[in-house]
Structures are given as C-alpha cells and as structure tokens.
Amino acid sequence: MQAIQFVSLLRPILYLKNPESNAAKNGLTMNRNILISAGALTFEGELFDSPTADAVWNMLPHTAKVHTWGDEIYFTVPVQVELEEDAVEVVAAGDLGYWPSGPAFCIFFGPTPISTAGEIRPASAVNIFGKLGGDLALLKNVGSGSEVTISRAQAA
Image (tube, rainbow, N blue to C red):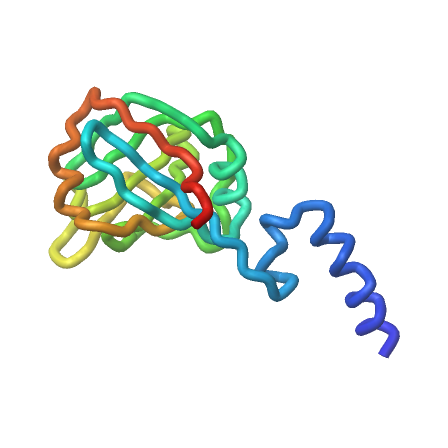
C-alpha cells in the first residue's frame, strides 16, 4: 500500500519536470505533430514519446541540406542522443529515425543499398522516434543537396 502511495505522489512531480516525455507515463496523450518541407512538398508527421523525440521536438525548427541513400533521406541535426534500448536495424516506410553516428535525422520511404527483398535497412541501428504520413513516393523527388525544413505543426 505504501509503495502505491509513494508512486502516486511522485507522478505529478515527474509530469511537472518534463511534461512532454512523461505524458504517456502519466496517462496523458501529447500530440507532437511536425511538418517536413522540401521545395513544394510538405509532409506531416508525428513524434512518439521517447528521449529522442523529445530532443528533436526541442530543437525545432531546423533547416538543413539533405543527402539521399537509396530511398532514405537524411540530414544532420544538432541533437546528441545515444541508441535507445529499442533501437532497430530494420525499419518501415514512413519511419522517422535518428542515427547517432551522423548525428542524422532519417526519413525512410523504401529500400536502401543494403536492404534485402522486403525490408528497409538503415546503415546501422537507429532510434525510431516518429512516423511520416502522406504519399511517400513523392520523396523520390527530393534530391541530395535539397533544403529541408522541419517545424512544429500548428495545433488545430
């Protein structure tokens, strides 16, 4: 009984210290929608609840020159986060990943040069921190050297 009281007393303190990263833990839903724009293209994405997503959210807005590697777009970001416990080496189309070796923000929309049939494989493990929506095939029109801007979407 005392442990339950102790936990329930700490939860509001955790929430007040960092409401965005503790939202899910406290039974709250925080929508952190972003816009990713490159030229005439704009995509909407959502950030998950993780330390990496927190770091990305806190650095917005950000503009950078992109690089492409197969059907992956990546660019450097001023974020320093270690690989999380649930980092992955195979991703899905639309996944937003953070590659600590870059450090880079990665947008996966199809196979990379090291993918095998039916998979999308980053160069090495990444933290998946969000998901991109829209017609991902349009990302093929974004070439290396293009400028991309990531910003917080305005709340509806």
